[in-house]
Image 1 (cartoon, one colour):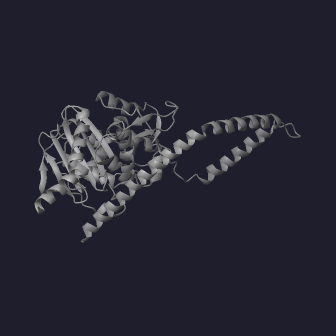
Image 2 (spheres, rainbow, N blue to C red; image 1 turned 60 degrees about the vertical axis):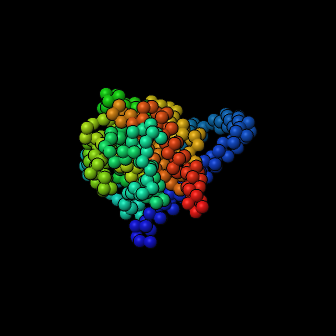
Image 3 (cartoon, helix red, strand yellow; image 1 turned 90 degrees about the vertical axis):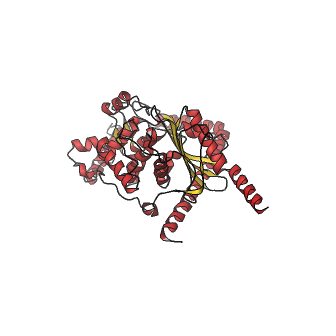
Length: 414
């Protein structure tokens, strides 16, 4: 086994570990919800008891000291002194909650932010993403509605089935897989996910003018960078994507340069080029379904991207404009999870513009632990797009395919 094989084997092992942890976490959360539901009456009773006791203590504790000064006032003054002391000690620390626009106004040079694309840490940074057709690669026809498709076996880096997989298409919102991948690699310290960014009117107007889907953020709303990642993928929010690009690179234009740099780094620049981070149609914004498959493979090797692309729902942080946050969903995963694919579809991202039809990219694992990536484009409805993914997983990657292969082997022996 050569060096590249070692890299891919270790990468595959890490992905499977993450799948297992994800499944265990889902089971743990399910059991926790069941326990909470069973314990709800007891919890309510305890909370009511604590509130009653606390109210009684509050009445008893309302007293003043010998000088007639309210004790609560003294405690407040002490807290203010402590806060001043902390402020002095932290005077040289950059506030992580200041957004990029505020920092620019305060005179911090743009070079403080990531304008170059670093290699990700670990073996993934050295991995060369590619998949090859073999003599057994199936040429798809009327089995699916989509005009373009590719199904890749990640265990062998081979193309199991294809249909116009190397033809140029408009990727629509599948573009956002590359958006979160580049943003994640440029982010650096995971603590920056708790940084905040204030949505501008220019950002909300951008999505409105181009008739894009939205995460629902409002102008002057301050949200976390984590919210921007999930808002970019789950509801395919243009507001979140442009805000994320601006936070990372200072502007969408500067961020798009990083996207194209990443495509070049991955060896995809001959057939892929981006002009925006959202997926809005442009003659110079293009790629192939094969390119999207390689981008998705790189994204699932990135812990943050994988986590975001695998989320079925997410509640954004509470803000003045949205006191309860915004509950957002990945409709593709929620609608395919009950379909029989011969395994589990773990990650997914959809897209649609008139020039590309309904399209989607997904990552699935069969019951045997084998991994696959499926990308389709130009279906005439969202439901047909989902049906095509189900068909491809079931026919070429699931148990049905395995049984068919075993039967063919037995016939050959016979």
